[in-house]
Length: 225
DNA sequence: ACTGCCGGGCA
DNA sequence: TGCCCGGCAGT
Image (cartoon, rainbow, N blue to C red; front, side):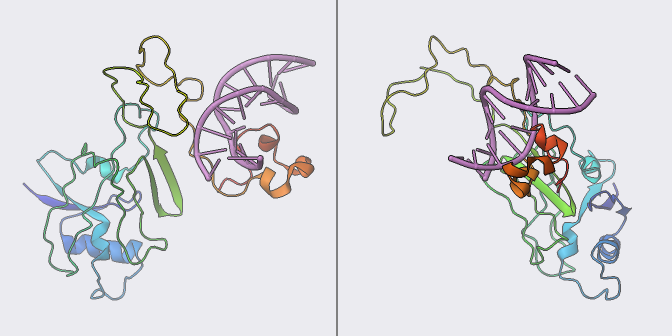
């Protein structure tokens, strides 16, 4: 069995046979620290993963971290590589294999945030709550999925609505048919674009300055970022 | 309440 | 197609 190290940088995917090699690659190529090879705070070992040949190649899909298909989200949320954040500070001492199970689903409530001191632009902040955002350097994609399927067993809605007000708001009248939320009308909405849009910028009164998409109440195409 | 925009209607 | 809007969802 051979152990290799694969660069996880956006779509680099470079594979080297030594940890030192991949660290050097990452420092030089991606982090722009080509000159001083002894300057290493261990940050770069976040950007590669250890892969084992002749084993189940878990790290295969990691290099091409493409948005696999955001619409296949219904039951199983997409999985992201969760690097080991509890790494040691010492550069040379590589303690653990960063083995990540492809279908390991971290508890949906725990928000995983990558620890880095340089949170400016080089580090991919990966969050795994209900929606994940991934921002390696500039280009960003984000994908979200619905809350886990709730299998409803038992009494539908009991009048014990422990909430001020009282009056039962949600009636499921009849019996429980609930198989999946009635999507299809709206389905998976886009994560809602950031930044200013024509309407916000020009205002309702200058509607003729909007981009056509905005005028037609479509997704704005002027302020794509 | 406001804003972005999907889905759909109308010419 | 081009244009517009109802209505929903996120803020």
